[in-house]
Amino acid sequence: MTADSGPERVAGRMATAAGDLLAALDDQQLAHARWPFPADSERRRWFYTPTDHGGLPLGAMRPGQQRLALKLVASGLSQAGYVTISTIIGLENALDELEGWTTGWDRERGRDPGLYYLRVFGDPTGGGPWSWRFGGHHVSVHHLVVDGRVRASTPLFFGADPASSPLLGPQPLRPLAGAEDLARELVRSLDGEDRARAVISPIAPVDLVGANRSRLTAGDLPLSLAEIWREPFDGAMGDVMDRMQRRSEMEARLTAEHLAALSFTDAPKGLPVAALTADQRRLFRELLDVYLHRVPDELAEIEARKYAGDGVDRLCFAWAGGSEPGDAHYYRIQGGPLLIEYDNTQRGANHVHSVWRDLRSDFGDDVLRLHHARHHGPPGTEPGDGGLA
Image (cartoon, rainbow, N blue to C red; front, side):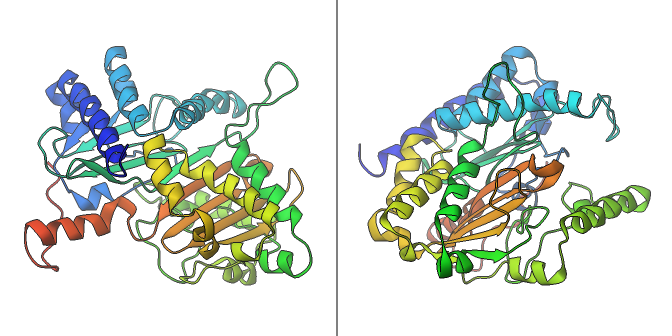
């Protein structure tokens, strides 16, 4: 298999699956499921809260249509990634029971596995650039296809609430266990100056620092709880959200000093991977692969080659919070365009958020600029919104 054939093969599977799904939808469903490309003001929006992610929800599809939708989702993930997402969606049922079957959010069911939304931008069979996304509570998947190849697959978000649930037998259900346990093992293996460099704050943030921003800039801090929804909450509900935010930060003993230490910077914070021992480097590599192997094997292999050998040395590992099981904690992996964030602080450190991002090519921004300059005109004449029909 050549270096280029993998992205082409994955793009072909995606195009077939997307075409089959769109052909099975009626006109009313298509109005939600298919939008023109690029529609940037919508395509570059993403969420991980139980809000309207934009698109046609699974609950508005017939079973046969759901099968086709999930076939498209699976085409953009590894087998392990698809099983993980399927488990995350199923956790909505467990969370419903955990929260006492409460209703809210102006809908009949507070936690609903039917509210995972799929939207295709452009024509997957037309030869031009197109993309698709799938998202709902604790899931956000994005892929861009240009010139018949998958060219971008981030942001890619997986979360879990509860992060750990009881099963029959001795082992709990922990869909994101690898992302937590390997990082904890790594930070606990550090000592002295190395640990001091890696631990950038004794207190973890109550959510991801980058939140669901489309683009990060130096100095960014976590967004408020009211801001990470499709429509920001204001009025009475906004006040409730603000009180929840303040209570969470007070219980965590999070201060402005901690937040300053945790703020996003262009220069990575934490301990350079180059400072790790050989055993620690192998452990870090396992942790990195947990994220890179969320996507199909053909794409993951290309991503992994970027960090082969000394290529991993440009990355840094930063930790915040405690390192004992059950402690609230956060970590960040950053270097070059790569940014990984993980946070487990909410619900007594049993509620995980994790995201893999490419600061240069989230949503394929750099790829699309180059494509447009090559085919449509000089830089600076990129297309705009593209319409929201």
